[in-house]
Amino acid sequence: MQAPAGGTVDDTVTDPPLERRERILDAAERVFAEAGYHGTTLRQIAAAADVKLSLIGYHFESKLALYTAVFARRQHVNEERLRMLEAIEDLDAPDALDRIVSAFMDPVIALAEQGTAYRRLVLREAADPSSMQRPVIRELFDPMAREFIAALRRALPGKPAGFYEWSYLFAVGALTQSAFDDRIGNLATTPPPASNVELLRSFITAGWRHG
Image (cartoon, rainbow, N blue to C red; front, side, top):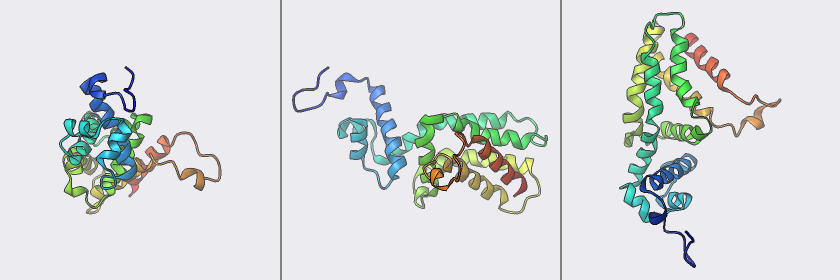
């Protein structure tokens, strides 16, 4: 369908509702990842999604509702992480820590290129002092975090008070920061490898084991 003279195609006619909603979520994920929750406006998201501002209001009742929906759409990642964690039958086994690390990071890494904006967004939200005013971390991430912390407590007994909680948060920082590869070219004296996955795996494993 051609756009009318002086205007744009009416996406309420050309696109199915679910496709419009996904386009809005894709754009919101990118814009929120770049500018953060407070630095983003619905008008910016509408422009990035190439939809009318009113259409965002049709699908999402508020900016917070849209922001939460962006994370909820990726909740299958956390569900897979928990599934892998629960599949570890013996947390006292020699390979238990390696399997915990795999459960923690592999489903996130599997998002590949499409997950870069999401990982950046998770890092922004986790580092934002105002994040506790929103339901994202509290409702979508903390229940999973408590399961991983409990597994670490079993696999690595005898650590000092606060170790399990802080080391989990440090690992979250490493995992999410790994999506930011902008600076590596400025810091590396030789061309960095194409993938940082195995270095990240060994870094998190060593931090948990020897911290």
